[in-house]
Amino acid sequence: MKSIWLLVGNTETRKSSIVRCLLGVDNPATEVEVQSITGMVLHMRAFISAVQEKKAVSPEELLRDLNDSHWKGQFKSMRNALVPLRYDPDSGQPAAECYVQALLNDGWTIKGIASLGEKARDWLKNSGLPYIEVPNSTSVPSNVVAAQVRAAFGWL
Image 1 (cartoon, one colour):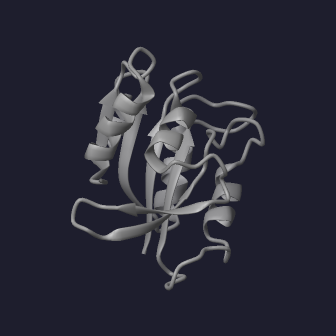
Image 2 (cartoon, helix red, strand yellow):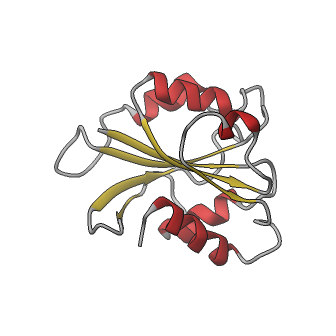
């Protein structure tokens, strides 16, 4: 099973800070364990910055990376990832909505989306996907936002 959680927001909405607070990592190659509220331990791979930023990873490149064989853990078919995305296109790459569609088309289960810095956009509201809105993510401490996101995602 391939499960993914997404942080979606535009520039300066603290996406990277929230990833660091949620998982305690600053290296995108790091795989960490996250415990769900049901007691399940998830081996989680995290991207730190929005994939459209800096290296400008396309939806196809993201899928190649996520589906690669570098995963650790006992079951190679079990994959969990936390990925930040920009709502709007950036660095020649498409908007978050395109990445979400590509992930769904590739068989990824989107377990939750956190809309940071603004209310969820219409495409997200109408998608049927689970989401949380944190429109004040820039005006409250990152650990407070991370606690809200963690609860919405069902993580301890």
